[in-house]
Figure 1 (cartoon, rainbow, N blue to C red):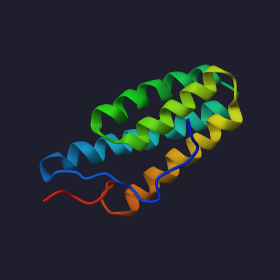
Figure 2 (spheres, one colour):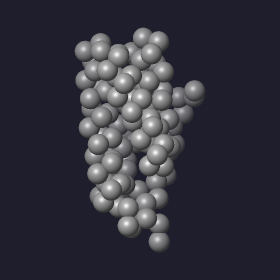
Figure 3 (cartoon, rainbow, N blue to C red):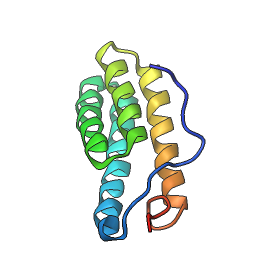
Figure 4 (cartoon, rainbow, N blue to C red):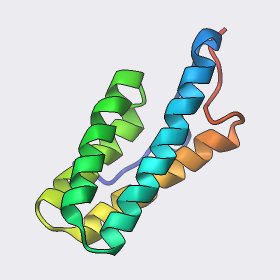
Length: 111
């Protein structure tokens, strides 16, 4: 997997899913924080497990970047590469922060 990341959030959220999406993204931010704590304490198994769940959820909700970076965390944690896992976690948190900066925790809405 490449370490490239999109330059801008790419989520488009229909109005009728905005509340659900905002709640999902809050959970993503919480999980990213838990992953970061796990990595900081050297608990790669917990980081891998949380990232695995986030990988699937990101895919189900249509947030490809959440899914991609979570998959990178999962893979790096599985092989014991804490540095690579932390870089992916940093990219994930940056992406989530950029989504939040667009207002209400997600990117532009579909009309």
